[in-house]
Length: 366
Image 1 (cartoon, rainbow, N blue to C red):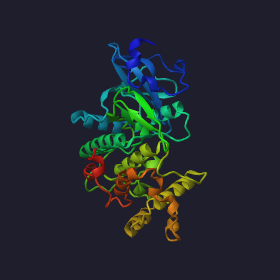
Image 2: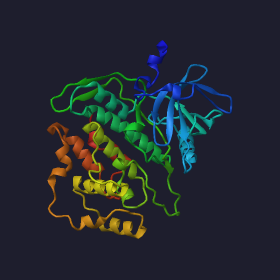
Image 3: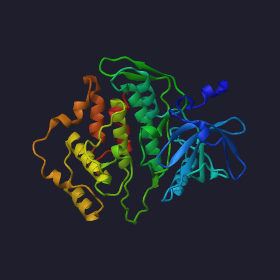
Image 4: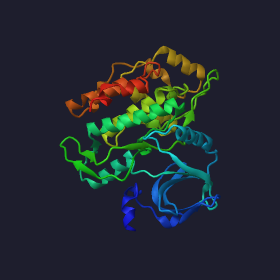
């Protein structure tokens, strides 16, 4: 390893067990550009992201797409990058170049996206700290850090909204710190706390992004968003909208507080349908939600919902042990839970906009 590799964004956060001999030594584009592979940022269900260096020594991230039965929707990702390039935002990762590889790795297409390099993601930090500490409690971010990170995510998503783009894949792995960062863990008898040397973030990965619907053309339902951060309307077979990413932001803020735990997760089920049913029932219980009749009617008319909604009519005495406030560890954390109650509204018509989210006291008072 060369000395300057220590400063390469994200290098210290390479996934465990990576054997670079299984990956290409370089990526070569049809336009003649060549990038040396220096490591791995991460791997997902549809892509692998390499840490690469161009001939001038500049660091980048190179995303290559796996071959799948269904075509990867790269045109949406390109459109998102193009709109961001026209109106950049400091918290949105930008494209350096996109093209075709002459030497795609086995099992991958020739598509490649080269973007600016970033540091570790929120997920990377949680996993790294969990490995480092010998404490059974999951580490969390400090309330101040959650506020600062949450505000930047909200500002980035508001910018995307103004560009008429839905992100639809907001999660801990897709929010990265801008550069390699130092961190410490503050011991706490309730829960260890992660402190960071730099809290500047960038949102990455527009592979699931979609443009806003054209006025006058009916929106179609699509199963979007990671299941643990999926908005209620999407579960109900109702098309996503401008408020769907707001729900994911609220869930992610809760995750940063809980550590690697998530606010809503399936407790039961073997099949995907059973797990979705289990998670949705927990969402209703945790938020003590009443789903408006018009949402249920819209769901039934659309015939895209796979949930059994009969449990809504059969809810007996509410079990308060699942309530959101039972996740609060200290009374001083109450403002964060007020924000979650504000953001995680089941009815998207009543859920706050990103403008309203950013004006909430929790994201302005720090």
